[in-house]
Length: 609
Image (cartoon, rainbow, N blue to C red):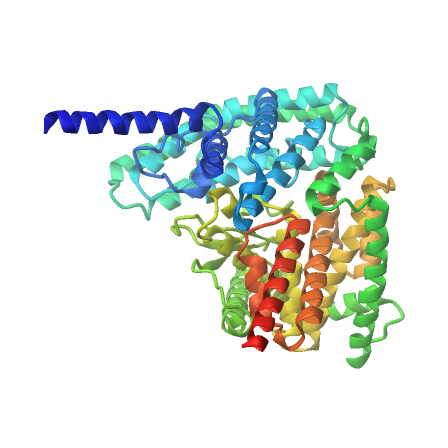
């Protein structure tokens, strides 16, 4: 018996070696094993991603929860090389031998890797320090909103991660210096904004900094931690903020002041070496199409004219003069009935109203969706330290384990900026049936490679967000004509983005020209417009993905309606769009075409029966 068991152990070990060696070092036996390897290699190089996923937190395999990502330019170069290696390996698998679902997975990953590989030509063409997603605000935000505090070890890891801020910021500084040598310097206003943000963030004593205050408040709900240990941990966090975090910010502030001395007021990426090609690369990445900038600009102008016509009709019906659309919308939005009281009382009312809107939408979507997300969504205020430069709202998906729900963050820096006619559409976009549905259903997918559950394509995700707005308007979710005007203004806002983004980066508009165009054509609050335009400047092409994605989904829906006639079921259409995960638009079209063909074949078979 011992010999048999020994022989069995040898066989199992040999089988494990035969499986593991190629999977880890060479070409894996199957493409599914390759997918696992791609994901594991990438994820293990990015501790923040592992924390965000939360799948190994608190287990013996949790090697990452006390570490921060490597932000050095050397690491960026290494990542670029890894992309090329993985793409070459993927191409060694023959798609002719794959089932349709497997081929779709290979095509999705292939598109993503090819896009990344093509973008590596412009490896350092970005701003590591910026208003929206720079190291100076993303690292504190990660610590306060993503890093878990469910067990005492999490609290210890929080303090250890604070001790890594110095290295992370020094890596960022090295990256800034390298980019300056290549002629990649942020516009002056970007540096002005982040310098103020960093100065404000470090102005308080360490014990009052948000990194310590938030940590202390979250520890109050942590079980298994006695009072003495809690005080030790808070004191440790305060020491790290005083001795590591604040000096790191001081070094980054000094670097940004040096950059400001050479920065210009040219805002578009046309100013970069080979800037026109870089912008077209950005558009391809963000829209997953080959639409040139001039075509996108023309689409934007056409959509602006169409939506403004619909808005004028509604305004006239409500008795408003429409000789100047923007002025009419501003007058309407300024009416006291559409606003909240100032201060924290107004903020509390806004959050409660957003939650009521989401709860109402959750009841209404039964007629439109068969597949619903299992995970929940809640509404929270954008962290105060980043309100000044954050957009009006955004959504953070929950963890894959379900331990952290999805969160719709609303910017409440000034309650007067929140207007009731805008709220429903914003909640539908970020929450239900928008990003919360799309991203959570994607995370909950079964029977697909893991990367399909997390891989992002902006045009698909943001296109779905806009489609959700349109769907809610079509389905009567809006309560009255003013809510409908809010929905149309949001649609107009996204159409204007096409014009403004291409105007800045292709047509060399100044920041002020872009702001003036947006205010003149939307009637939006000037403070919101400034925030938006500055976002487009630091993230070229991203704003174009929304409308391009929405128009493709609407086009595909109409295509299915025309082909299927009375057999068209909107719930099935939504299932097809959402249950394949995030896709490039060309692959989304292929999926919908295959579904249409299958539905028609089923109809034919039913007719023969």
